[in-house]
Image (cartoon, rainbow, N blue to C red):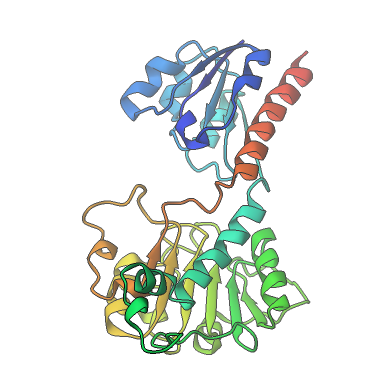
Length: 311
């Protein structure tokens, strides 16, 4: 069996040797759209994180039997064409929940604690010149007693809620699908959540219900001093609106996901004046050592299960 791994660079330095026990393995660190067809032409199994597999790719690869998506989302695969051609598509879910939850709080603490400012304050020598033992020029607030609104109360959203609750936050949520009936926390309309919350974190998928869910008009409803964290998908929050509001109002934004990744040079987020109120990480919330290990194990398990069923 020929197994083609198309974008191994997304696994970092993780050990991929276990794939060798399943068949003949070819590993490519990255694959451009122009390279995909040639690389998969004799494949039985494709492993892809973000490389797009189209109907044309499937049509030109008659040997293809299984597409393993090394992620939870499968929007890079033409699922209808795969079903039509009896090609199985399997993803891995739940592997990075703890990693994303942890990064949510990492981003929050970095922003509200003014970590960049205080680190530079000491290392640039300003603290050594201080007349007092401390510096309170950048006040920070406690999570205790603050209202935390969660957009998308799935597994990750619930994990964030549970930890935020231990800090003493008051939790509420908005269901993007309208189908969540969680009784532990109050469900609010989006406008009510935006108006009333001190911290808002997004943990929802990108779909027709969430595209540009938070645009300029919606973000204007947030209270002064509010913190907005997007660890769901880029496109849920309008980046032009964020860039505008960061320079207009006293609000903090942290984004781990963007509408186009990697970020484009023309993205307005790169040109804001009030840079200290905006924190961006390059889609790393899912990438803890443990999460990547679990992801690889999940992909391998999917291949083994497929082989067992076809035996």
